[in-house]
Length: 538
Image 1 (cartoon, rainbow, N blue to C red):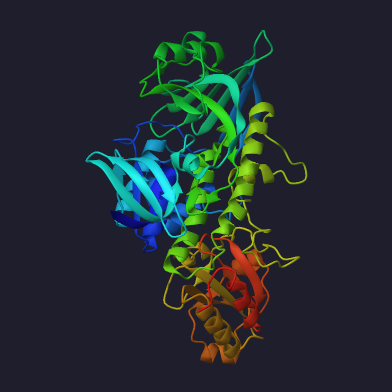
Image 2: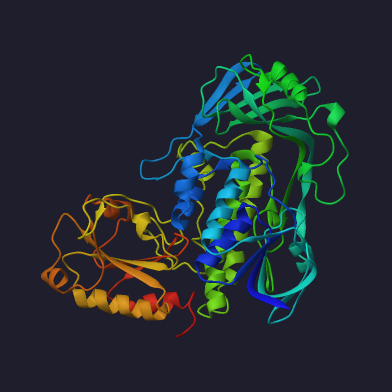
């Protein structure tokens, strides 16, 4: 019987992200997928800025930037007339913008990245059964070579809306389905609308409904993924169970898409070069919980909802990102017994909010915020996702960014041996926690050394430490002469402005790029006590 530390079921973007991050951390990991080959479909195409930040930390973002195209905003048309225009503007300190990339390209890049980490997808391999006890999960597989048995310490179900892992775990998946059916097509359009914008055109129908056309730009000249209401001749009754995603049967033809364009396109347009098409349905469901013993869920196995705002795949990738570092510490024996419980505590509320928001947007349009007009765009970019109330967060009332928030990026950091500035996120690309010690004129080297040593020991050595020196004033003689830590100078004062950091403050950043604690470096016992939430006693 084969064995492994972690079995990942499903080789979509979520499963590939989980597997790559586990392999990057030295975890024995196997990935299986029931399909013989990846699907060549542009299903999920929107890439959020936060996802690009994660891929930066993984070492993948350069390949993505080579192949993706920018998403600049949305042009809306109502009954043929221009409606509200949305420009996806973000603050200058956010390193990445919105992008579009076909899902099959995303999966190819992630699979190649996984291979570079020493992993591979076992294709044509389906999970037939799962049985778990206190120590392991026994898995029955159907493989191209016949039935196989596998023992895994943990199983991560990234196997979609019809998840075998979720069913085996006995986890409920409550929700409902939208009655409408839609069709997708990957085509080229010859209209004169500006590139880089999603085009949404709607008309009210005689029965009070809405006839809609949504076109998302893709890499290639005039290439779009178009979605629209399905014509009656292609409509089918929903299958039993969860009705969500692409359906088999008759695929839309180019003429079906052209008929909708003739009816709804805001500019004269001819569709050509149909790459693929399908009919699909939408449901909104949320798993009751994300963990049952040694079985865990991520992505569509845990939450499904309308594709409004391109939240689904990106939310699933963040599930995997959150889970992988915690699971790696658990496998290594360095985690507390309750660390994996924080996955449910942190990610289930996120899934619940995304399902609720996307259903609301699908029915009533995007929310606005008169007090903070930038908030809706930041929320869609998934830059406002945070864990302030999570079990791994050390409250620090009145501070911004607060523990639990995404650690903001900032530029202009310099190091003694470099002739070029760096971004803070470049320092956070590793697989470990990062401790940033703000060292000003009032902080001595002994204090910083004591804090760093205590934290390093409490974190089982899985901690990177940097002393961040302010530019506007020289460090104290003790720091300048006696500091034996890696030094980063805040040359442009961007770090101090972004974090509103005080002299002698210690900022702990988790491996997934979230601020965990802000504590005085002079009191290392408090920092050690906080790290005990994550790390087992040494």
